[in-house]
Length: 293
Image (cartoon, rainbow, N blue to C red; front, side):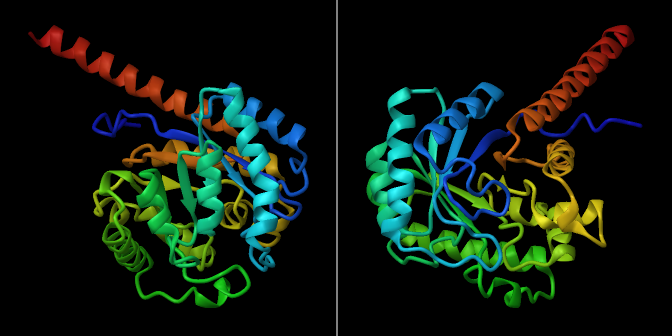
């Protein structure tokens, strides 16, 4: 196997998932007490996460929406507690509600991760602009109860890139600085299994936007479907985590800004292995050049 030594050498940021929800698809009801949430945040940082992404509303397919007040009651004490601990990781708030984002920023969050790309709440971009925080703009077409009916594309990668560009333009028009924008292709949102893999294979279309790219494939159904096409729901978290780490390693051939994952340690290990391969390739090339000279 010939290694591609021209691949990007920068390691992606690792965003560790912290869901303080009773119904998230992967870890619902595991960290919905303040103590368990804070303990898990500490573990994520120890494992190597540079960012902790805290969410209080499930976006799994078919999930029922909750009020912003209920979301805030779940996440704000957690954001404040983690901020007070000064763990050394940035805090991201995973929300589609501008009011929740604003309160989370006051409590210590420095990143808004809006899976709706500002479509669910027209005030989201104004909040990001006002506080000059980083905002992750994801590709999205509708809420969890209808998103599976919206997965219609002629060319999924090109259309996702076009729709993301429109949301980026809207953010900039609202006063968000371009350097504070990160884009996310929205894997699993209004895309079927085949479309998700087509999009992953053509992330170069997203790179053409000229913005940092965050990928969130962790434990999602299309990952499981590649492991067990007949019964994807039977695939364990452990197998999904290994597959996610493998995908992360492969995607490091791209220009990734970051990856959003549940199992931080497995992902960090994969990133470090690719880093070692980068270094070994560079050393080998330098040795060869010296011999030739």
